Figure 1 (cartoon, helix red, strand yellow):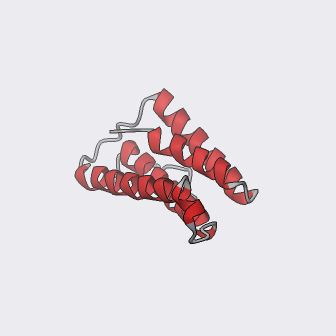
Figure 2 (tube, one colour; figure 1 turned 60 degrees about the horizontal axis):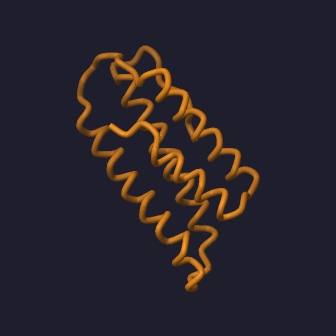
Amino acid sequence: MKAKTKKGSAMGAFTASLKNKLDAIHDLELALRARRTMTGADDLMLNPTLKALGNAASDVQAAIDADKTPTLEGPSPADATALQNAIQAAENAIKQNASINDLVNCAAVLIGTMKK
């Protein structure tokens, strides 16, 4: 996952943050897909979370595509901190081979950050 924004580029800081969020979404999605059992047990938490992550990825990609401003306006400090904390929690959960519950919780927090 990439948790740093590009400095000195024409891309706005908000777009860079959204790209970081998109990377984290994809990483969590891969970690959860690796846990799938392809049984009914997946229907309770895993499949709905994968669907929510897919929807969030589409929303974030649409926001990135729509942001054509070359300004360096960034997210609010609170939004930036929340996103960075969510990405760090997701990275830690993936590295520690966390339980499905922990990954699902990380996904829910990540999806809720930086809604545009």
